Length: 161
Image (cartoon, rainbow, N blue to C red; front, side, top):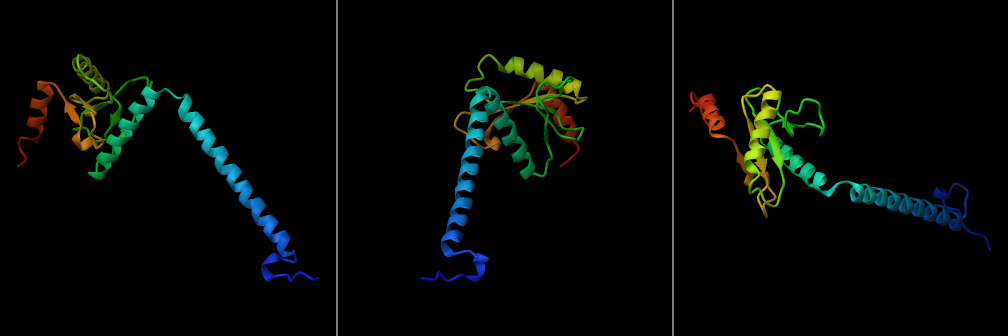
């Protein structure tokens, strides 16, 4: 019995074509699974607290992008710490992003650090943008600043309607 050869088989039998397709499919599945395992391993071995903070920073950057503001994440461990996010507009403050379940007793320290980072980055003041419990959108999170920073901000926009 003669097997018919189709034009797409390039001279191979349909069984050979089916085997070749299945082999590519198997290789694709093996590759996909290997990449998935590597990704899971990488996420499993990284510090979960660092990942949580990085996720919050990315969320704020993405939120600001929807408003037309181009913010950049500053790599951790930079020699001259200017905050977590940098906006290349001099009027913008230094931004330190926090994602903790509780901010009790820490806010004062965070604000001091944000203002130190602002001085390092040549900014007038710093703010702490921190996640609220059960709120995923950074528009719903808190942004804290000192009274001096608030009055500086109001003076900067005071001449605008």
